[in-house]
Every structure is written in C-alpha cells, then in structure tokens.
Image (tube, one colour):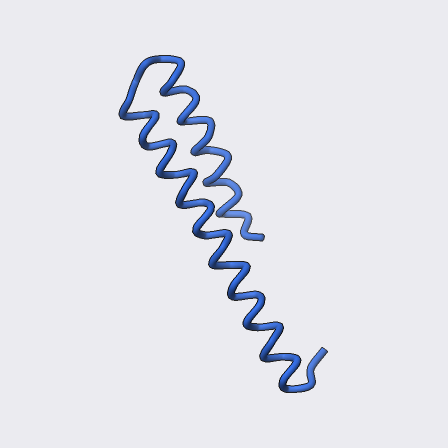
Length: 62
C-alpha cells in the first residue's frame, strides 16, 4: 500500500469533513478529490506490486 496514497485519503476525508462542518463547499469538494486521488494512488501501487510479483515468478526469483 502506498503511504502517500494513504495520507491523501486520510487528509482528504479530514478536509471533506471540515468543509461540511463549516459549510464550505469548496473545501468539501477539495477533500473529496484528494480522497479519490489517494485511492487511485493506492490502486496503482497495488497493481505495480502485482506486476512485479508476476514478473519475478516468471523469472524464477523469489
């Protein structure tokens, strides 16, 4: 899992919540976008790790 993606997800959720509490739609939207960006980073990192693992298995590496 990507630490940067995790940070973005958590920070995005916090920003989204702050926007909701204060009634600031712009902050809320920024938070939603940052949260989604974090999810994308995590999925990309997981896919990268899966490909590396598959390549290593094909090469016979452990």
